Length: 156
Image (cartoon, rainbow, N blue to C red):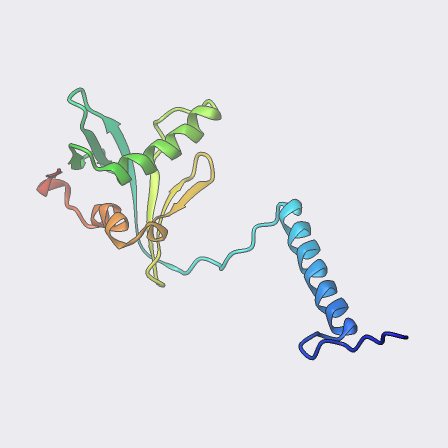
């Protein structure tokens, strides 16, 4: 007695399976090649609509003074937790320490035409796209663009 096998009605043809596997392998190889090359692929920055150079200094009381880098005048004093603001500044300060750079150079806070907000460190080339962390966190920095040094306020 000879047993014949009939293909299962839901089975995909072998050629189709090989084609799908080939597409997956080519895709993975392409992604690996781009990642290993070190090339960064991102959308170009939109034109700046507002910017401000700022310096940040730690106060003896644990606060952080926000200074306009051009005038040297205090525009804000951050007191209390302010976790996101402090965390972003720590990340950029860490890069400066790793490169043996001082804290004298200003950071650039840039608002762009497409609504993005960037905190950039010209001394290291590092940047943080603040809008990526949500509107509440980005707002902690956005307000620093418009604060007047004469109307210094404290941020809790």
